[in-house]
Length: 428
Ligand code: ADP
Image (cartoon, rainbow, N blue to C red):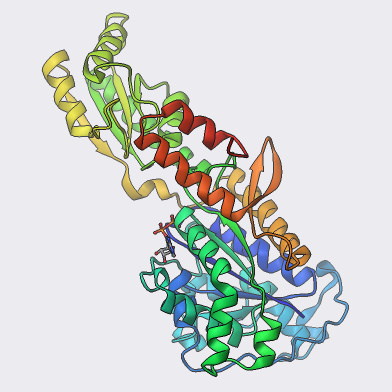
């Protein structure tokens, strides 16, 4: 049976567990083995230090029963491949309770690439963050690190990989895919893999899922985790609003989004904020004068509170960064407002995913497995997206490049061009 592995990488986002669950369960339903890679690219580079390889007992694929009719513990003695397929390797709830990284008693120390069963991911849908861990990995930026990652994938017999992460992680995925034939040839030459392994793994099947709270990936309308982050921001701004109104204060609320103002803009709309600062749509002219004009008018109309939302990466027209403290100083000096700054920080990453993120992660996880099963050496690697409420496949390389182009256009002060590019499926 083909072995499909799934990993999460880069910044965590709500819905990553739902994505892992969906990939694992649909892989199993499609007669594949489901595997996870702990700790993102770092885990892939480290591999299974013990060198213990998975036995191939699951390779014969018996026609499996419907999940509802399964009495796994009764029907299959533990330890058989069919039992493992359904009951899981680690047992119901254990991975969940401990977080995979802590589970030394499960024999996971030094093991990063693990086979999982149906029950291993049970109950993951509503859990925040990522239970299989995520990391930033410097080694994977070097060829030597990607070489080790390739060797570890091949020695575990992984045929296909789903990577759920932001544009950095997916850039890494694209690199691995592009270099794959050279990596395999080098491993073969050094005797680290056999000729048979080189033959079986001559193509890397890889699919990306976009897990990012910023909603910053071009070519897709929503990323996994953005809806939850937005919901948390709205809750926080609601709380701030009531105290602001009580004391007739101004609040400057900083939200995440380095190159993308989606969270700031949507939070501004959803909370009725007075003014919003974004990286890709700087205020016209002098931002101080523009902001003060708007806020003074709102006060004159009788508003007792002032809420300004500022994205982390907010810029003035001349590309100088605008910080919450800059804004606070202007509000205090020019408008005489009692002003406080609130940086929402990591609370925005979310916790429990909202329904929209569970649905998105599940639909996309299922589609990722379908894309891998249909992949041939001729088909490109895809990122699974969503456009106009339809799940889509966009070429991985294209989505990554277009996202980088958006940032470049902002740097050239081509703000309209940047927005047009992020919204369009294909670069002109
Ligand atoms: P995100 O995926 O959330 O954007 P990062 O940008 O930190 O997060 O990327 C996560 C990881 O992806 C990095 O730590 C690194 O291992 C890998 N990565 C990012 N960019 C590249 C690149 N250009 N080449 C290879 N690997 C990369």
